[in-house]
Length: 99
Image 1 (cartoon, rainbow, N blue to C red):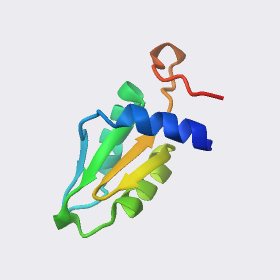
Image 2: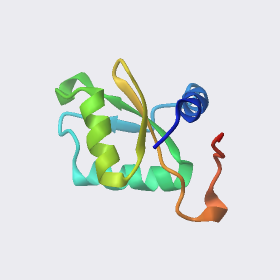
Image 3: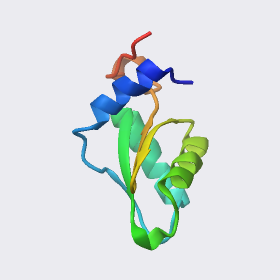
């Protein structure tokens, strides 16, 4: 569970990021979950966008993806969401959270 300070730190880091995960009309599929898992392992912090054709809210998408991948939801604003999970390999960890 992230603290408010950690969440604020991650929101600041996510601000300049481009959308790397796009959710289309198919919604949350196994392929999307696998792609997010790979992105989280490589980058730890992922920003996604839910297209209008998906007919889903970013919050429901974020919750479903976090449950499937073991990630933590950071932020949901408009059609965008941000999720975080530390890399499993300690050598690949890039983000150090505040205490």
